[in-house]
Length: 146
Image (cartoon, rainbow, N blue to C red; front, side, top):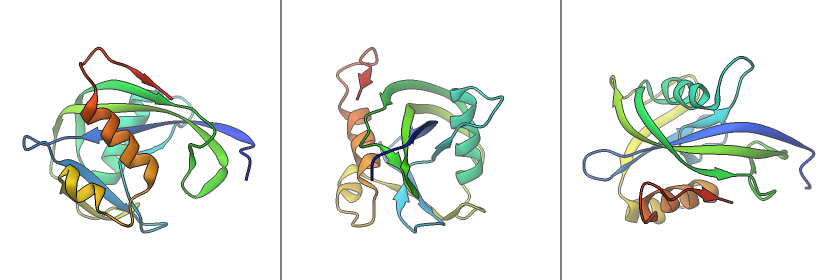
C-alpha cells in the first residue's frame, strides 16, 4: 500500500549501564518495539518522545539526544500502513522512575542485549534498524537521515 499521509512521530532507544535496550511489547499487535508514537497537537517532538516513554514504560526521561530522522516511504505506522512516518529517534541517556511491565498500551517491557534483539522473531524491523543505527554511530556528532 502506498502511504497517503505523513505522521510526525518520535521513538526512544533507552540503554542501561550494561548496554541493554529497553523494548516494550505492544498491546495492539503483540510485537516488540521501542517506546514510540505520534505527536499530539501542542507538543514538540521531544515532548512526544518523553510522553510516549512515560505512557509505555512508566519512566521519566531526564536527558535525551536525537540521533536520527526516519522519513523514507518504507517507514509506516505499525497499525496504519497508509501513514508514512517522519520520526525523530532519540537516545535516552538519563531517566528516572520505576519500569512498569504493563501499561494501557503495552503487555510487557524488558531489557535485551543486542544479540537477543537480533534473534527476536516478533520485533518490528524498523526498530531493529533504529537500534543498530544508535549502537553503531561513530560518534555522538553523527546524525543519521534515512
